[in-house]
Picture 1: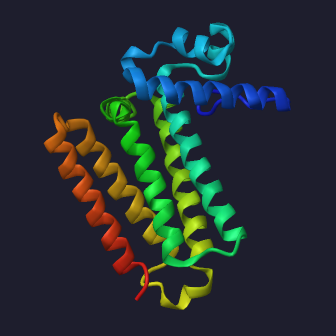
Picture 2: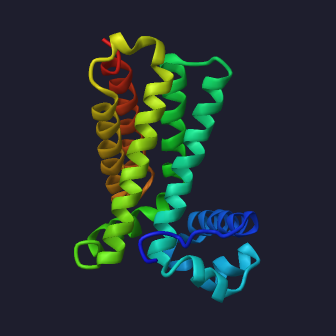
Length: 207
């Protein structure tokens, strides 16, 4: 089953997959994508390398799935705020900030995410995984936008689908910028670009 992590057949299996992805996120963030080996991820997760490979066929697969988990966690955070009765622009901007904060912390991944995108042009399994990741992340963005602006739909300047796609594509552009940042001055420019995205979102989301 190359395009997805293999389905967990039990609650224990699901916990194992989550534990692996959490360990991968920590190691990729601390040691970089090349520095964190499949063996070190298995060790950090407390599983055998064989079990790791059962769920994730390659490090590229693991990278994509770890990013997918991040989007799911941010979405769950937004859903919880909406259930508490919070909505509108403050909640939307908090969600956007949460996504950016996670991307920023994982900036050592950026060059390798770009490399994975490049490999997708010739590697069918990677392309299918990336397609699935993009489809799910955009769907989560759409659902989050619909939820936080449920009481203000008549004021939205564009449909949630278009707004979600704009956010996803812009964030991808910032990932490219992070990949090429070489020093603190470069990182400050990327942070300023995100601040511009945030301000633009606040301006254009509602008319």
